[in-house]
Image 1 (cartoon, rainbow, N blue to C red):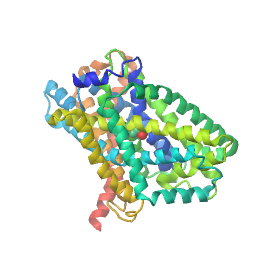
Image 2 (tube, rainbow, N blue to C red):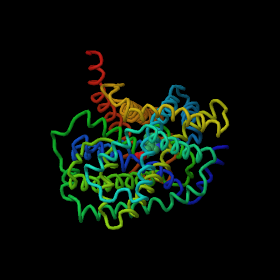
Image 3 (cartoon, helix red, strand yellow):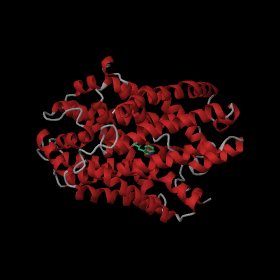
Length: 460
Ligand code: TRP
């Protein structure tokens, strides 16, 4: 009852699409997608990512929403309730439990990067990008990263913003913000694309992103593409399940999912094309610059634009809001779980989990300066390791278990009960893909992507 009351705040029509899009569109689209595309060579990676969205992301998103709407509780309880109802093993609540862990790890580093957007918003409002070129922008960013106190300040602020909203419920302010934020983010991306077209290396960018080079295909890149498909759609950890539990029974799940997935993909592709157009036009910036790519590239573009201060400030403000509506959905399942499982008050739970994730996030902060050379997993630093464990291992595993559960443990009638408002044809395709293609694809990529890493550990 408590949760229903809390979520009833998203009371207006279309709230689910809004909340799900708010969760899906975030740093994953604007910051992460371009930088991992750059690190993995471009076109072939983009293609693998699109295949993962279509074959794995969309069907599993439908399954995850369906489970949430049917269970109408936090992810772990949802899985337990449905399993009891169906008379199958309690083991399946592991999906919810693993999701809580994944969300916790993701939140820890996501708030660190979200903190960078706060710093860059502040710089933009002071005209701090004026006249930057590739080298000075790189220097500015390195200087920022070398200052852990500053990183921690912004990380703490972002965590506090997240905890605040969740502790007091999703307030009117944020709902209103998201309502105008999505269209404005779109408009700003179009402005950015237009500017990239007129002054960047637009054609080179398109070629980089959409020309397919077979030698760039690898299991390692496939694993990153798969993980990112889950990450960008907020799948595999119960966030979408938690939101689905507040979805009205009359809404069509299939249509909703397709709208959310298309919007999410569009934002990512637009951000990617714009960013790479500037990357190729700016000496001193390489596509494979890693996590700093957006923070080094865009300031140069804004700094040389006629009304760059305003466009730059507006852009970073949109990224802040997009990230904020995502961190909320990352924290929500853990909060719901802890309040139910341990009977903690909602505010206590938010503060407790937020503080713990914050402490873990300090490791990511340090991995950009003092701990830059400290390797945790397979030569990866702390930040990359957290990201790898959560995004590339836990989310696909969670998604795989959901596909097996809905496709094989539930009967056809049970699985399709929530889809009264979807077409029979769509359901046929959905069930086939979910039963065969999605789980096999996830498993193939997980095994081929992770197994080589495991064997290097043993042979060391
Ligand atoms: N999808 C968001 C993004 O692209 C991040 C996110 C929100 C997320 N909720 C999630 C990732 C749940 C994984 C799981 O920025």
